[in-house]
Length: 209
Image (cartoon, rainbow, N blue to C red):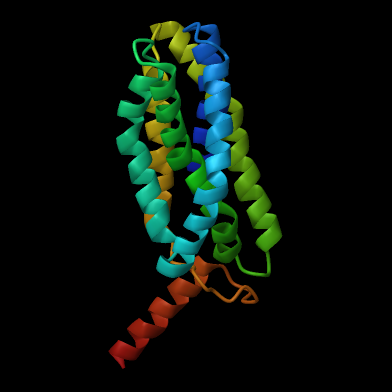
């Protein structure tokens, strides 16, 4: 669920709330966020397979960690450009494309295969459904609503920044805590965390004996 929070929460903020905030509150031309997200999605046809290949080569955890850290670092500079009308539409769109690819599409590229490998065959579909939908319901369902309330209360875009960083931090912590699951046998009945714990116990028992 924590991994899902990072991707789904950022998706709800950027693709849903931020696009509307730029047009309705900051009075941007509606083509700016719409075209930026469309172009970003087209770029995703390249970045998503690339990240999938990298995760096959270097593991699932490392790309997750790098993407979440990148989203945290890029949140302030990219969003400060996106909401600033003094920049040209091209620069604003480029900033939105960058943060969208790092904070949303990149994580989406890793999500489904990683979650399938985390859970064992005994309860894979049930636990994947609960993790994905529970995380999506809370992050996407309530995130834009809370962002709207806080932005209205503060008359500022900073709540969007804070929530984006918060979601990415949740994703980062989850990635740091998860076991590496690349090339895991999907026929194994136990979850990856259970298998890792059992392996540690066997290793400890071997050393003791």
